[in-house]
Image (cartoon, rainbow, N blue to C red):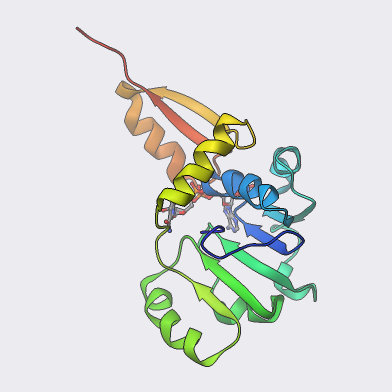
Length: 182
Ligand SMILES: NC(=O)c1ccc[n+]([C@@H]2O[C@H](COP(=O)([O-])OP(=O)(O)OC[C@H]3O[C@@H](n4cnc5c(N)ncnc54)[C@H](OP(=O)(O)O)[C@@H]3O)[C@@H](O)[C@H]2O)c1
């Protein structure tokens, strides 16, 4: 969605939910595109997001970025508790709000809002084009995009894996191992 949103070098990108599965990838992709990245998570994940390239850090439990007066070219919400009304003053005049995890009303409203305002909402599911898949594959091959693995569960513990994910504090990704029983 960052590639779809045409993030350019030197632009500012705030990533809300920066230490999760989507967020840890988004930091690395945004840095690859040359953006200046502000990561938002709790303090326990500050070092993780900084190690992935985040330039600035905000602890959402201590301060609300929507009240700090700073404007960003892009705000990406992977957690899902933001909406356009809440973040619009934190977007630059032609800024874009990337909704990775959003509710249906927000999705339905975005085409209408995009017709009448300069600030845009990108709210559709990420589309895999050959270009974006090739870009991501190249980043993996060059180790510029490294998956962050939090915990690994065997398939037999898939319920525990889901329960862990549903707490919504994973650090990167949860992997499942599948053994060959034959
Ligand atoms: N649109 C698409 O194409 C697409 C594609 C893939 C996924 N998704 C969706 O994207 C979402 C992202 O999932 P995910 O696995 O990356 O992460 P997640 O587990 O849903 O969220 C984890 C992140 O949110 C932070 N967080 C937890 N509580 C928070 C709160 N109250 N306020 C603000 N931040 C909070 C966590 O930080 P701390 O742990 O430091 O608190 C962490 O950075 C899912 O809903 C998924 O369905 C959409």
